[in-house]
Each structure stands twice: as structure tokens, then as C-alpha cells.
Length: 407
Image (cartoon, rainbow, N blue to C red; front, side, top):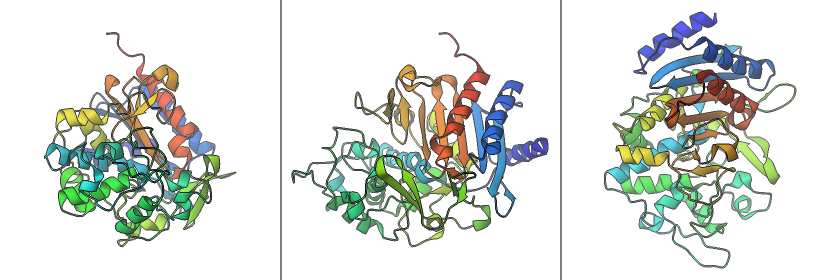
């Protein structure tokens, strides 16, 4: 059955424009299969789609497990997922496409496009936030899900972009602006709703709604036909689950899931079908693993036809300098983190590897030095974003491709 499934995958990819290679090496297939099978057997994930590209060729592809456990619906390569923060590199690329076209500057103040967006520091001062600081999460903004009860972001009922709050973008911007900044802009990296604010900037700079701008500048040129801000085919959507014992639990709506240090993720799976909810640039898109692979490979190869080569390279470069990033040895680029010191990050990835994930259970990375791109979408959060599955998969890939060539 697995062989038949892989032939089906190859046929679908052949019609999608994705470059195909000879079958993966026995070592890669065996090691990656083992990582996927172990996560399924141990009930850490319900289903997954894993794609691996090496030197521009797709060398591994597999849809495994179930898209809907209760309906016994199997996972397919073209199963659609709620992308959550996998939305960020796509919308970041949209902003950078506007930079390439001279319609936006990284050093523009946000107030040039959003005059009323003026969050204050705790001392009452109103600092200037730039487009660059939104892209790099050095704006001083935060995320509600990471905050303890009764914090300003919780009190203001700010939407994280994937929750049950059915408000429009101007109202969410008002709520964000009403909460104090955590730090002065440029002083610290803090993962945040910055990309949702960036979405509003994109609308003003492009002169059109965010979904139209993303489609025109990124998804349509790359034939990412399944990637958008609205799910229109429920039968293709993966059913979301969350970590629980003895097996992952099916999400209700809304679904609260504990987050470290007193935070709380609140999911609303039905948001993906709601045309009236604001399109969250940071967490609101839906799409497939093949579409995202095509996007990431476009950036790795130089950005054509959506970005100029220097702009594409800038997405994969560290832009926060010596500021503490998401973890030791890791900085941040545009749309994802960047490995600065592999030893400090405890990773076999090369310096310069660009990577991130999403709270619905996704991870991806681009190791340009090795010509390697890996996309792993699951329907189980948070295991599929930062659990053992992600490190097992990563290590299986590097064990299989061998040591980096000497220079």
C-alpha cells in the first residue's frame, strides 16, 4: 500500500510543477519512515504529510496516518491544513515584494500606513515602530497566548489570529494599540502579533485587501492553488487534534490548550471557514504541504518570480543581531528563525538554516548550505510543531544525507 501511495504522490506532483528526482536513498526512506511510523505508533500524532527536497529535487514524499481519525479518513498529499504561523513567511514575502516594487520601505514608520496605531510604553511614551521591526518581531508587541491571566493582552481581548474572537482587523489593531508595549522597539525579540499588524500595512501599501495582495504577489505567481485565507472544501481539511493521553484529543471549538509559563492557546478550527473574520497575516491561512514546499524552494533558489534575489536571501538572514532569539544559538530573519550557532542550538543543521512552524502542528526548515528543504505538516498540536517528532525527523534526515562536504 505504501508503494501505491507513493506512485500516487509522484503523479500528483508531476502535475503540480514540482521537480521530481530518482527515488530517495534507501537510508533516507528507511530513517524518515521510522521517525514517522514511531510518532504514529506512539500516538503522538494522528497524521502527517512529509516532503523533503535535496538539491532542487523532491527525494521523499509521504502522506501517513489519518486526516480524520473518527471518520477513518486517511491523510493524503493534498490534504489541506490550517497553516497557523506557516502563514508568516508567506505574508512576509508579500511585504517584501512590495519593497521590491518601491511601494513599501523596511524603514518606514508604521504610522505612515496606520496613523492611529500608536501603542505606548509603560511610561506613557509613544515610540516609533518600523516595518522592519514588525517583520523581525522586535516591535515591542506580544502575543496573548503567551501571557498569564489578567495580563494587558488578555484584558484587552486581543485576537491571536487563530482564536474564537470574531472581530475585524481595525478593532484588533485598536485593542493591540491599547495594550502597553513590552519593550521599546528594537530592544528585544519577542514573538508577537507583529505580522497581523504588518498585514494591515500591506493592505494600505498595496491598495487592496490582504488576501488579494498575497494572491497577486505570491500565491498566484507560484501556482499555490490551495493556499488562501479561506477554506472552501471542508472534505479536504485535516481534522485538528491536540496533545493528550493516551491519544491526541479531537479539538472542540473553541479549544483551550495550556502554553508554558501560564499562557493558554485558544484554537477555533471553524475560523478557517468564516469569510467574515479578519484575514490573519500571522496565523490565518490554509494550504497544503506541496504548496508550501514550492514557496520555500522558491525562496531558497533566489526568489523568482516573486522576489529579487537579494530580497529572497534576506528572508533567510539573521536580522536581530546579538539580541536573544527564540532559543540559544538562534536569531530571526523574515518569516522564520535562523540558526546562527549550530552547536549552541544543539542541531545538526548548518549555520544559516531558516525554520519555523505552526501551532496546529507544523514544522519546516531550509538549510541552504546543504540544498535541503523539509516540510512536515501534522494535524496534532503541539507535538507536530516542537515535539519529539520534529527532532526525530530532523535527525533522521541528517543521518541519511551524511556529513556536509568539506570546503
